[in-house]
Length: 435
Image (cartoon, rainbow, N blue to C red; front, top):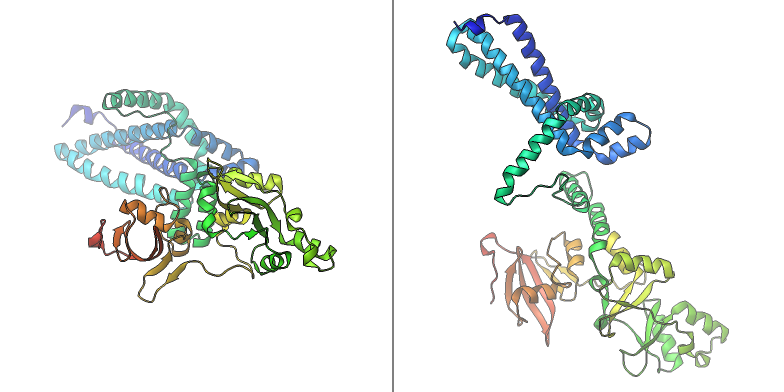
């Protein structure tokens, strides 16, 4: 019999083992509760005057120190409990007690000190974090310096391998964390698709420019200012838009923007006589914005100027298209339509499961309508994506497979792809192909 084990009071040792298991359960449950706790919820409780939320917020602000202290405390009590249990069972069963101690402690630690407390904590992490916060802050005060020293040693050991870990380094940005959380809740069924898309659109505003959402000049509806006044009035009244660019000589020579309400007021003053109107005098001065203006800045500019319409120009001052306040808002809330809007979207689902898409349809709009995830970093429209991936302007009838979809060019007008058929690609044909 081991003389060291024989000097140990077995009942005192068992009592210490039980205490260590309780402390281990505390450490495990605290780690799960605090790492899963909502910072936004804690911030709201803190503003409401909950002092426990202040403790949780301070602990989460030094997450690395918190996790390190809990891990050290957990390992200390687990090792101590295993050593004491081994000494007790060796005293009763001799050398076979080591095997018994391994089986018993593994079962107790896994069930009562790991799975059980973690399960309880994850069911209500915010509530558990508030209840355990003060005890955890004491643990961090005791083991915090040791955790800091251990973390510093780990950084030194990883440095020769080219791995640099910052003290407060985050893997994801705040926007990415929010987006990932919303996507996860959508997959779990807690967030509707429309709400997910709206939230994602709001986050994307800072990454998009005016050129991503503008109406291209080839699709702009404008009016020749040299037309007879009667014909010009008919054009304005038959248009689904309230603001129309006016040009003279050539479509690129914009001389102003005509608002339908201003035209109706002038027509009323002229007692309905359209021939008496001078449309160029009614038109407002055109506002030009660079195509690389970020949407967030353009939205603020619209609000500041109290206007909804701007012409987009490139670096040479050439008109590239137009952008409205509604175009920006649609990036957040989705398609906005009223009784005068044109219903053609350019996306036509087919009975066989494929989708016929106009080449000018923006990738972001197509993703939103079809719940797809085609990349839009290198191209704005679906035709642009095909050309980018093909590295050439394809001919009618050619097929390409990439990003999990098969694209077939149905129609082409000179160098422009006008209509595409898109269908899900079979798993075995994952790669580019032409035909």
